[in-house]
Amino acid sequence: MNSSVQPDGTAGKRPDRVAAVRRRLAKHGPPRKPDGGPDFATVTLPERDCDQVRDLLVKERVGTVVEIGLAYASSALAISEALLRTGSRNPRHVVIDPFQYTAYDGVGWELLRSAGLDDIAELVTEPSQRFLARLADAGFSADAAFVDGSHHFHNVFVDLHFLGEIVRPGGIVLLDDVWWPSVSAAVAYFETNLGWRPIPGAPADGTTDPAGSRPRTGAYRLPDPRPTPDFKEFRPFC
Ligand SMILES: C[S@@+](CC[C@H](N)C(=O)[O-])C[C@H]1O[C@@H](n2cnc3c(N)ncnc32)[C@H](O)[C@@H]1O
Image (cartoon, rainbow, N blue to C red):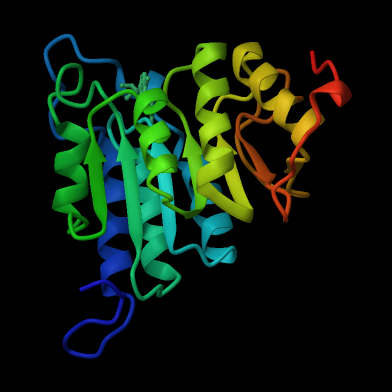
């Protein structure tokens, strides 16, 4: 069942169930910590930022979202909650993480399943830089993407390149950790050369760096139509 309308006709129970799993995760952490697994507080997107991501995706009325970096599923739960709240007829959430079983022992995916999301979410356990190329080749189209995988400049750049083909013109790309130079430099290319535009007021009330000057997450709208840039007009971006 894909919408938030239940067999008994009540709306909203499914997203509320996801929200409850999300709240429990934010309050108590994951139900189990894999041996030597990454620290929850360090890797997870804070609840406040998850709320911002959810609210923006609901506002955009997304139906299909590609996410990079599952970890313990904080952002994934927020994204799935948004997909259910929009009431889309065929919500789809493609989640990519090559280390979900090797580093996280499947805990993030178990949390998505425990929230009843395995009919809308699908997990791909290979590096996004490889999988996205195939997804683009297959002509897959998404309304939005959330990027929180590898933070190496070259990997973020490749992710954004393929997401520029996958996310529909006028769709949006959200990124965590734009306060890191490796991430902000990658997105700067797309902003400077390919017409990606920061969405005004988004995130409205997310986490900032300790100095309070730089927001943690970024949100960009892709141009419509897709640009066909001329290499002679390349603009240095860093
Ligand atoms: C900071 S964590 C993501 C946190 C998650 N967004 C949350 O809110 O809990 C980064 C994740 O990216 C994954 N990752 C690392 N390299 C990746 C790659 N090349 N492709 C996709 N995911 C990758 C890691 O396994 C890890 O789960």
